[in-house]
Length: 185
Image 1: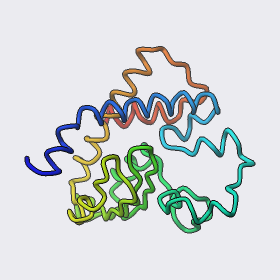
Image 2: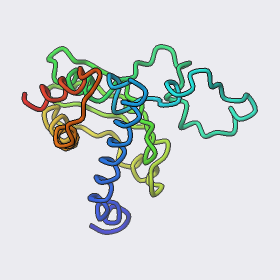
Image 3: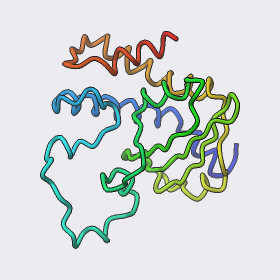
């Protein structure tokens, strides 16, 4: 593969390692904040400093990419990864809106069922390496729901394996048990 895609895919392993490290750190924060039920994607600030309010003079200075996590976005449902994957597998799944806000990319995904597939309309706010325009050029992504879930399951399997290998004790293991059930299905 040439061009920017060759560069991007040439770093797939390092990005996997970065995602695994993000999940590890998020797990530590989730445990410290007693927020295991919303791990791995959650707003740490709302647990560590719930009284925190962004100064009004900074509101217009920060990039719009942080807006998806704002609680002021009424009507937009935010899904966490495991519940999202559970939902996608349900026969009556029709649509979902997902807001990603990690330190490596920020995006909004509008997901809709199309037969046995899922169509993802992505709006990329930022990516590590500045690939937003390249990703936007690709248009919608359509994947079989089963394949979409199985790709995420690879990452979740690694996380579950690490948690079990380290004998991590979770105060609330609901999401962990749901993850294991998802992987067993």
